[in-house]
Length: 581
Image (cartoon, rainbow, N blue to C red; front, side, top):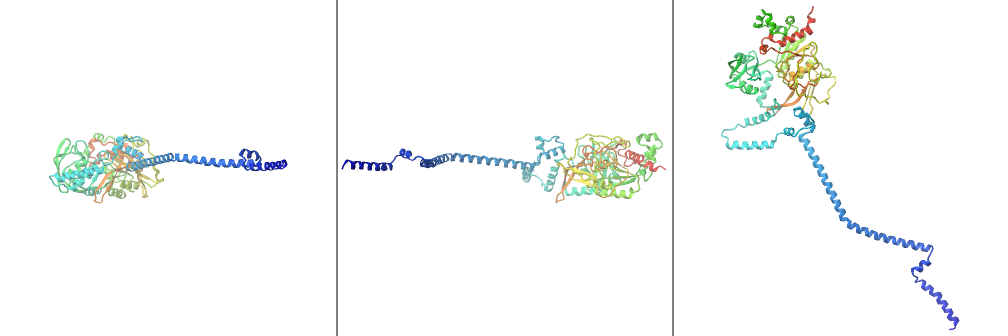
C-alpha cells in the first residue's frame, strides 16, 4: 500500500471514530454539546424526576413519623374522651341533685316565705337550725319503731290492747306535736266530727255554759237560759275549781270541756266553783240543748229593761251616774222603739248566718234607722259563712280600699274618738297579688307560698244603714274578719275593746272513714291588706266594760255600757235630726 492509500484509510477511520465515540460520550461531553433548548428540556426532566423522588422520600419520612406519633395521638384522644365523660357525668350529677333538692325541699325563696310566716326568719336566708326544724317526719323510722313496740306488747303486755284506740291516739299525738306553733291543729274521730257539726247547728250535749281560759281555772262567761247549768244555779263570773273531785287549775280548757264537762245526756257531774271568794258546790245533770244562732231586738226597748238595782238607783241619780260615767242618760232617754235595731251572732256558721239574715229581713230592714251588730264573744267559724254575710251587707262594686297607715291603726274622726294600738309581728301580703277591678273584694288568703283565694261580692244586695259593731277580747277569727272588712270600707264603726287577734285560717281534711285532721294553712287579709294575727282589730272607739258589770250585762242590758255607748253615738250622729220635729 502506497502512502496515498494509507493516508486515505486514516482519514476514513478518523471520520468513523468520532461517531463511535459519540455513541459513548460521557455526561460532560453531552452537556457541552447539547446546549440551548435541548439542555433546558433535559434539565427540566431531570428536575422533575428529582422532585418526584424527593416527594417519595419525604412522604416516606412523614409516614414513618406518623407511625411513630400515632400511639401518642391516640393516647391524647383517649384522655380527652375520659375527661369529657367525667365532665358530663359531674354535670348530670349536679343537675340531678338540684332537681331532687327542689323537689323535696322547695325553692329557697319558698323556704324564706315559710320561715317568715312562722316568725323564724327575717332575711333572705335560713340558718342550719331552721333547716333542721323544717325536716318532715321520718316515716320509715317511725314505722320500724312502732313495729318493735308492737312486738314488745304482743310478747309481754299483761292486758289486752285496743288496737283501734291505739291508732286514734297515734294520729292525735301526731297532730298534737304541732301545737307549739299551731294551737289549732287537731285530729278528730268520726264521732268528734259529728259533734262539731252539731255545735255549728247550735246543738250541744253538755251543761249549757260558755267558759273561757283564766288563771286559777275556767271562767264562766255566760249561762244559757233554760240550760242545765242555769237550773243547777251556775252563774256568769263563777270560776271552776273542781269537776268530780279533779282539780282543773293546771288543765287545758279543751281537756276540761271535752273530758270532764261534756258527756251523755242524763249523766251528772259535781262542780266546785269560786263565787266571790267562796267555794260553792253544784250538782249539774247534763242534757241536750239548742242555742239560737242569732238574737234580734230593739235597743230602746232593751235599754229600758230595768233590774231591781236600776230601779233602786232611780232615787239616787248621783249613784246611777257613777255606775255609768260615760253615758249621756238624756240622749238615751230620747231613744224611741224603731230607732236602732240590735242583732247578735253566736258564730260564723251557715245556719247561724242564715238565721241572722232572716231576722234582719223580718225585724230590721225598713223598720230601723240604724243597727248595732253584737260580735262580743263570737269565736269565729267558717270563712265561707263570713263572706256570705259580708256579701249581704256590701255592694258589689267598690274600689279596693287602701290601708290607712303602716301601723294598722284607723284614722280618727271627731265622732270616732280614740283608738287603741298594738304591736306585733307584721305579716304583709304578697305585693305581686292581682285583684279584679271594679269588684268589691271581701277578703283574701295566702299560704306559705304567697298563693291563696279571693272572695268578691256578687249577690247584688247591700245594707244601707249606719252600723256599729261591738267587739271584745273574745271576738276572734271570722268575727274579726267581718268587722275589719266593714271597717276598711267605712261601712261600720267598731266599738268596744281590742279583739282577740286570730288572722289565720284552718283547713279540715276528711278521710274515707269519717275522721279528719285540722291544721293552719293560710293567713287571711282584709281588703286593705291588713292581717290582724296577734294584733287584733283596733276599735274606732275604745269602751271598757266596768269590772262589776262584766258578767251581768247579758242579763241586765242597763249595765251594758258598750251597748249604751253605741246607741248614744248612733243617736247623736244619725238619728237626732230625723227625730227632730
